[in-house]
Length: 324
Ligand SMILES: NC(=O)c1ccc[n+]([C@@H]2O[C@H](COP(=O)([O-])OP(=O)(O)OC[C@H]3O[C@@H](n4cnc5c(N)ncnc54)[C@H](O)[C@@H]3O)[C@@H](O)[C@H]2O)c1
Image (tube, rainbow, N blue to C red):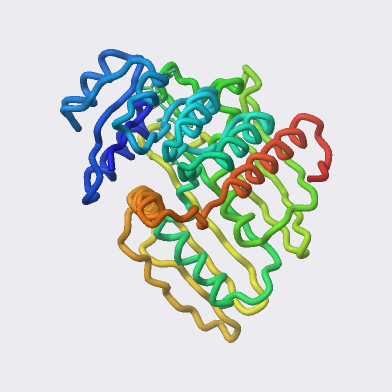
């Protein structure tokens, strides 16, 4: 199976490392507009077939899988073109910036012979796989409340700092908070209405947002995101889930997840030593090999995660509850 990666920035490298660990997979080509990065990437992972133009790479008949790690405004066109060529496509999150683009991608995926998956990596991440299991095994009982947070340093690493441009990345909600929104939706189901409040910088780019999501099943989720961590501190996240049977606490800097049951019985849940990015890519490759549609994250779920994030942004802008 031959893979071509589009965009060799931060995520392009992360994906390349995973493909290199998989048997029967050849990292074959790369498309990148920045010549220096293209050469560096080729030295590190090559020799590869090098393209400046993503569409030219998509037309290469040798390639089976196109992996799109481009900035979000460039998700729609290459994804649709690759699906129309019946290539398999792994697309970095978020699916798109607008529902119109997301629906166009969904239509292309539905009429392609290629498999398609949006890389919502929390669904494969070690800590979150433990949390998912707790839900599946009904260890928590009916969930009343979830608090989820994700804080990073200002994303100064992105090419041209496009992540800090609302029009390019969709801002903090669409770029960062979508991870937790997607994970919470996966476990709590349909959202009824949302509200948000945040801290804007001098250019009205939000560096912190707290959102409230009310679910049809009666649960409430408080999802907070921010670029307030000091430079060099990296990413930190946490999740606390208050269920009728137990409280689950995950803090990303800890080696265990805590499960406290009534009577004060506190258990440590083991976190498996797996790499979420590798798990995600290995799963997608396996779906291709077995000719089955990815079910851990479906295209409809990726569209819904974007839909809810757009509602969070509208709530932030209008300062009111938004029905989803
Ligand atoms: N799943 C995660 O944990 C995670 C983390 C970070 C980013 N992302 C997502 O991954 C995607 C890429 O983000 P990144 O952080 O890797 O960005 P980045 O800026 O580090 O890399 C993007 C690369 O694409 C190249 N590029 C831009 N436009 C191009 C074009 N038209 N043709 C060819 N090359 C082009 C840039 O030169 C750059 O090298 C985004 O959608 C982002 O939301 C996901």
